[in-house]
Image (cartoon, rainbow, N blue to C red):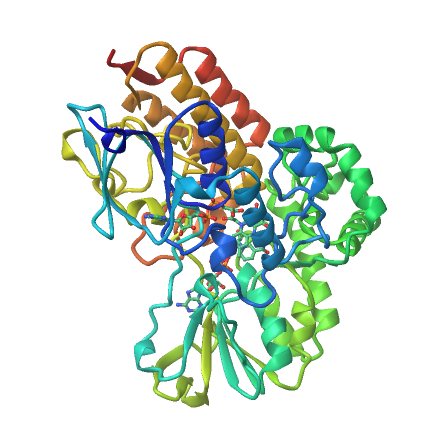
Length: 533
Ligand code: FAD
Ligand code: NAP
């Protein structure tokens, strides 16, 4: 067998934060690794989401890799929350700095992965007909990488351009003088709406569910502030691995303080900005009455900002507790509705009837549009993995195995699919934490695991059904100890008609989860079968 025909130790799918670090870590351990990436460049989310206003909502100094101290010290972030362009520059810098590009095949989508039982490895097929064999296949395909267009009557008949925020044109879009419609008011919509409002002649926002949003108070980072943070980077990172990056916690419940103190605390956090707002009291995510106090605070803020009472009313979320849908972080979102060129259509009161070539009909009124922006979200967590035809032992498909919702052990592997790993998969904390912390942890666990197999002379590792069943129960129980299942969120697949409703991320502190993963490894990968000499 020539070197070229030799199976890869690992093929990694995706070249976002996860895929790049997986490549770097495995190569550093002497593995032959190839990355396949559907896009024409590296960056994942930050390659695709070039919509105006796109930026992180975890502070830049935390939303970055921790694996290399020099990188950490040398990279200078310019803003409290970095823009998409800056994050993409950072990821490209990482790809160059660690000489990763030569192991990445761009413009290549994995379409089929079949476990070859006689070879103990994966046969892979790409959309351009390339066939590869790998001992391990690592899905770094992203939790939010399959954009979803809304299923609205006759939307395909609309003659203007339709842009999804998650697949934004690289050359940008000029909305000057146009009548623009935006569907969707989640994190993406809330970021893009104020930007489009500044440019468009007329902006109509179609809102199905009002969301809670906290001001970012984004600003340039001062050198001194950045240096001080970097001087304590090790402590910050250690804390992030234990409790997450949004760590301004308190051990008090909302009703253990007076109403005045409570309001003051909300006020203080609101004025600081960002998602630490949701940690004002320890019981906000578990006690509905406590949650009502913080939700009321935000609703009062919305009413104070938005001048038109009816619009303000429509913008006030009232069908889910705060934090049960991912909280949004905005710059001037609510203020945007005071502009004369912005109109809110509350789809709960007046649903869209249908699209036509020139626009949309709502409650008998035709609203003319020149362009449509869909900030309508993703087939989250399981979508990218299920888009690939994955066949495990006995040729059984992952789509069949997950017909009632994803089932994994630790969010890392699935019974019947040996040597197939997922990074930030369903059943891990994933989208509930700073994702780079979750990504780095998974990559390290997977790299250790592959080393262990090699050292012990094993060819495969695979989750047992019993351990997987226990884990699925455990993840389910963790969610139900919180208010999280009360919202129709993408966390449980509610945004996709027909998708099984299963709360997918693991709602435990990242430190708890990390210890659970470590215990499994320390016990010789308890709950997994290691086999084949
Ligand atoms: P991705 O970045 O999604 O990369 C996956 C890659 O896999 C993509 O490039 C995709 O093209 C490729 N791919 C998928 N399927 C295939 C296939 N079959 N074959 C080949 N290639 C494939 N998280 C935070 O913690 N903080 C934030 O502030 C934050 N902001 C966000 C802002 C936006 C607009 C979005 C959409 C998400 C945000 N996230 C944030 C979540 C984000 O998903 C993660 O932070 C992180 O970027 C995920 O990296 P990843 O490498 O796992 O996945
Ligand atoms: P999202 O949270 O799923 O929001 C999608 C929006 O589109 C919702 O308002 C949804 O309404 C609406 N929608 C979907 N289908 C519709 C239909 N048929 N008709 C009308 N409205 C429809 O998606 P997202 O905003 O892209 O965010 C996804 C996640 O990505 C975030 O939660 C976050 O984790 C991450 N993100 C982060 C940032 C950041 O600030 N750093 C920015 C963007 C994204 P319903 O709520 O009624 O379903």
